[in-house]
Image 1 (cartoon, rainbow, N blue to C red):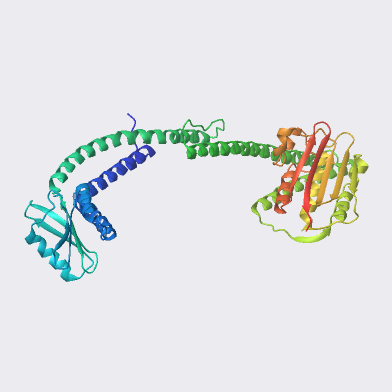
Image 2 (tube, rainbow, N blue to C red; image 1 turned 120 degrees about the horizontal axis):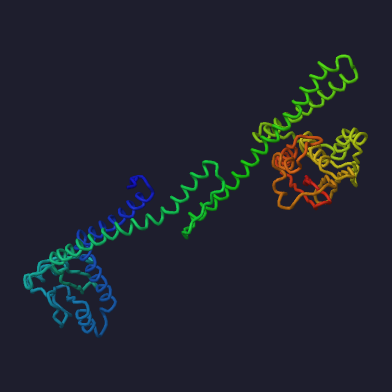
Length: 464
């Protein structure tokens, strides 16, 4: 038998629902038994007060006696209007059971009220005529007339006893039902959460094929399921990217290290007497060392950006001049690899305010990316247009990017994996660095691509 956890959600909800029922019953007992007499008197006093206000309005009415009789008949209330000598000028002609007081007793409270010169007064007397209690509302109508409105207060002891017996049965029935219904409700509410918890444990083992779902029509639980499914998908992407990162970084580290070792051994063992071959081997070692340096620098740059260690250093500079200086670095690619760089711009000078070194790195990385992926014509275009803002575009003529892959190309090594070959230049981290720098500057950016025609990477610099 499965052990019941006292701190489980099912038990907690069950306890709270039962406690809620118990509190409601306690209030019922408290107000229906303890405060019944007080409440009953307050209702009667309010009733007398309403009649008194009516008499004030109708005191000069020609049919006042009829009004008094109607009230007596409808509300079981006795009414007497006297002058300042206690002489009755109007009195209920209909005798209401239990509310009439003999002259001796009535004279006492009438004289007391008239002498007191108060506007109103409540009296509670025992009526020896009917052996009951009488509630009397005395009110001054004007300087010469007084109204005495009284009603019988029924004994509440027997009513309270009956009510108590009834409440005992009601309490037992309600508590039993609350135990059963509360347990059923708690099970229904906790059931989807228990399933979600079980699925979360599976997710914690690294199984991203798990699916969070619920058939309950509860908004908070449905939102939780959506959030967990979204988190699961993002974690799966992160895990895939982590594996890609490790695989590609390992590949990019392993390849130059292997070549450095091989050419170093050749320089040491095989080419000691061949100066030309030895220098060639040493140049290869230097190139691969440079590649390692670039990789390490890119990783450090991205790490610094993600940790927000470096702050932007905003300055004003000429964007056209910056791009011309960057393109000079690629002269070796023109000569040795046959690459063709076309810089298209309408203005000779465009001043912007930004972090010059970081914008330089953005353009440099985007050109490197174009070099790695452009078509057989080796054509790369850099275009700058100034309208509402400054649009910078780097265009290649490669195989393009599939629409479903576009959201992921800014992730580390994503395109490097799809390309299945070593980058001619760069490390595969370039677009991640571009993304981070442009987001730090709050520049919009993106890519447009047509399969087998090429891709256009762009970013927009707002005018200040």
